[in-house]
Image (cartoon, rainbow, N blue to C red; front, side):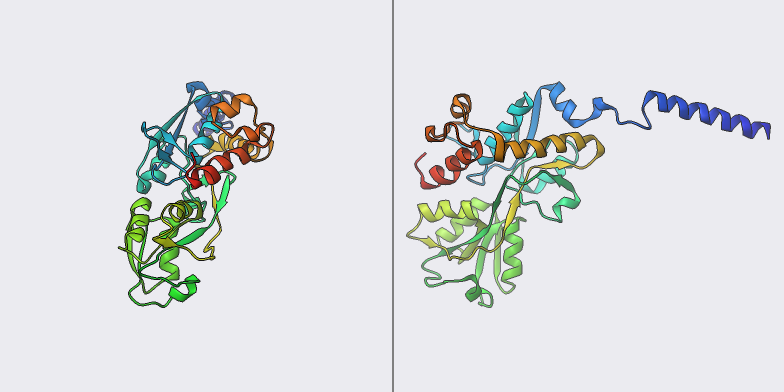
Length: 292
C-alpha cells in the first residue's frame, strides 16, 4: 500500500513538472510554423512549374506567373525572403506533408479528397474546366454532351489532375492520353487527340494563340477553387490563420501604390485601386492576349 502511494505521489510530481514546463498543456511557440518562417527569414514554397499563367519560367529561367506573384505577396507581408522549389506534380503533396516546404501553391483545386491529406487556405481564385477541341478532327461540336457517348474519342489531359478525373467521369468510353498539361494541349493542337480538358485560363491562352487549329464550346465543365496548401498539424494552426487573413487582404484590402506597382510590374492605370484586380489584369488579360 505504501509503495502504491509513493508511486502515485511521484507521478503527481512528474505531471506537475510537465505542467510548469508547458510540455503537456501548451504548444511550444518556438515550434509553430509561422514563428519558424519569421525566425529563419525565408518562406519555402513548393510548386509544379509548367502551368501557365499560374506558374512558368521566363526567358532567364526565373519563376513567374499568377501563383508566383501571390507567393511573393505572402512572403512580402511576412517580411521574409521567398524560396520557390519546382516539384513534380505527383510528388507535390507528399513533399508538403514531410515538410520539404512550408506551403504549396500550384494552381491546385481544393478538393475534398486532397483535404484529407493537407489543409487549404481561403481560395484565392475560382476557375472552371473548359474543352480544347481540334478543328479538323471534330469540326462542329457545340457542347460536351455531344461527345459523351462518342466511340474512339481520344482525350489528352494533365496527369492525375482535376481535368483528367473530370474527363474520365464525363467520357467513360474515351481513350486517354495523360501527360503534362502543356504536352496535352499540344496533342490537341497537332491532332494527336480530339479534345483536352484544362482550367479556363490555360485553355484560353491556346485558343488565343492557335485559333486556326483549336476551338472551344460555351460549356464550363466545373467550378474549382484554387488555394494554398499547408500540411496538417497543431504546429501549422497559427500559420493557417495568418494565411487566411493574408488572402483577405490580397482580395479586399491591399491597394496599389507606387512601390507595389514597380515590384509586381502592374499596369499604371490600377494605381490606387485593388491590388488583386491589378494582379488579375496582369496575368488573365494582358498575358492571355500575348501583349506582355
